Amino acid sequence: CRNAPGCLENLLPIITASIGPPSGIIAGQAWESEREIDLGQYHRSKTGALFVAAAKAGAVSVGGDPCPWGVLGERLGEAYQIADDVRDRVMDPASLGKPSGQDDFHGRPNVVDSLGLQGAVDQLRGLIQDAVDSIPSCSGASDLQRLVLAQAERLAPKDLAKFAV
Image 1: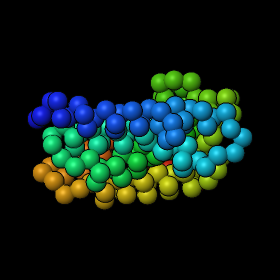
Image 2: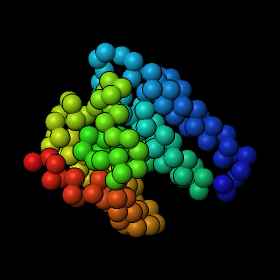
Image 3: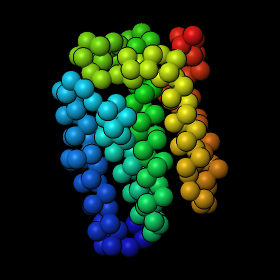
């Protein structure tokens, strides 16, 4: 941080908000025990809160305004969860690198159950584009946009689309 004492003072509220209730990862995990949930809010809380914190913390660490970066974190976090739901449904354990079918096995909320596979893939693509479009104007914005797209491709390879038809 450019101003370490001031930076820490600005980072702590961002980090604590990403962890606890009402919208941090702890809240998101707790939603897994509910019968009916708002799937988008669940995703934004479960993982999105951490992505928001990371995006905002990056801005704070260089002396910038964290607010414009929140949308990027929200979209990336929700996209990550959707990609995870899709991968859990369609990939074999060897390719996935962990057991597949765990959402169904544990009865976890899943966007594929809610929207179908094609709907989930379409929503994922829309969130990635929204994330790229939300990147604030800054030095390196085009590099960050390319990085987001490259990571999205790595997380949800194009060959997943063959399962969605």
